[in-house]
Length: 344
Ligand SMILES: [Zn+2]
Image (cartoon, rainbow, N blue to C red; front, side, top):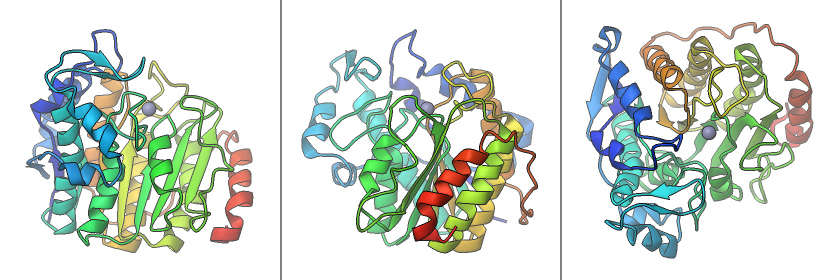
């Protein structure tokens, strides 16, 4: 039985923000220490990361932005914006984050491992073509989606973004491209301000952006309801060749930046839903990459549960959630705007 592939590398600790910045190397230190737990010793293959090439990064980013980041090499601490910091090693670490995810895709798509999780930083989903923002430098998942297509690993890619924040950079990278379907659940209105229900993509890709903006306070059962009632039927019709997940854990109930109530059990169940979708359309090919998540114990324990879930076999049936009812309205609104494209 093939294992779950893991990208981890102490080099990811060398992107230094500041002691008071929530996106701090201690996040990954906490996650890496959990990987030593006995339950995670079997069933996981550690894979070698590599740096993304300039060409791969420029499938998503402009040459001038790429060069701006390159110019920060060995220059000490600087700020791209009030949230987004770089240090001397950040250029190299950011290339290693995007490239590590691409290396993991190679391993999953070749069958060397059955699925995988890239435990990398800096995160990526806010990074736009021409600028970094929201703690993100290069858009790792967008680069990886293009990598899969350029390498012939997948024609149609589904990106699921369960981070607390809307992945504006990812949405904008693919909003006119029907070969990549972007689904995001996120707190709204909230940083970065994008991600309304009405943002559904542009011609010829209307319906290929699906946003589930949530007011805050939603928990496991609400998310399960949204993923089963909205995402699962859309994914069944889209039939992706590969599922990529922007896995942020700032929807955790104790996260200092968020207002959601997701628990470790919730992340496990959402993982099962995504695995079921991937099994139905693409032989289970699913790859997670780390985005946010700022409660260190919640982050590390939630990732542990996702990794244990990724090693489960068989396809559990959909669960009957007991939602709070606060997601009903948004589900109806999503159905209304997406109905012409997905017959929801
Ligand atoms: Zn986030």
